[in-house]
Length: 184
Image (tube, rainbow, N blue to C red):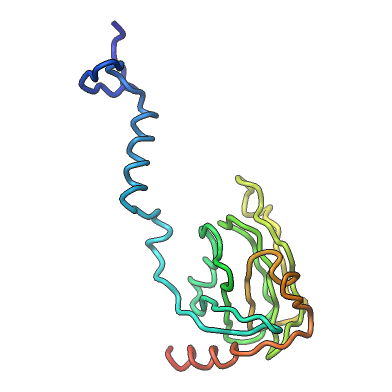
């Protein structure tokens, strides 16, 4: 009979089965139980849900999460599994500045839309996450063509699907910025 070592979990014998399981098998069992009972990863529990607001870009309507705080802007859409149809994230800065984004923590590709006032002034389409293990110093960045106060992230391909190009009108963002500034 094999002698247990510190990598072996001893369980009572089960009919027709060996009486030892590796730690890896035990860990997989524990993980499956935790997932079934709805335990969320720590990064999802550390941040409250963000407020939402409706906006329109070109002829397409969206409901966007609004990131106004430095913490919400830093996290962005990181660690989310994806976006539902018709949703995105709106980043509101206090003033128009050159905006630079990276894809740290991202799990899916995006279209990043730069907005000045009430129109699209540029975009970075189909921006995808860096490969796993990429050091922060080597991550790709994407910058706005001009200083902007507003940035919207939507799923990759959204702009093409909705025919949105530079110069497209945007509504609802400035009203949302005013409303969220009044709440602060």
